[in-house]
Length: 70
Image (cartoon, rainbow, N blue to C red):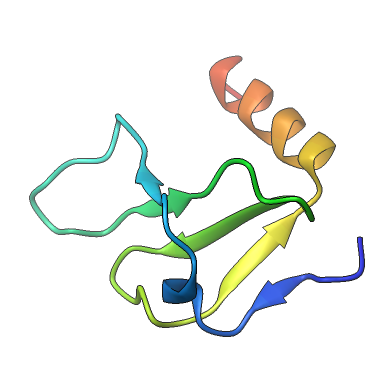
């Protein structure tokens, strides 16, 4: 994967918040599925800020670890 960041994450559409995110503070992580270079992740408080792009396999392992309570 050659692209590790997206400088302005608002240029992409289809971001979604985790269903576990609360609405109290507005602090959450948003992800975008279907991006060809990996899985972009951004801070919901800074939608025009950067997004980090993770390799799909690495993101899947991270999510599996969360679900397993790690």
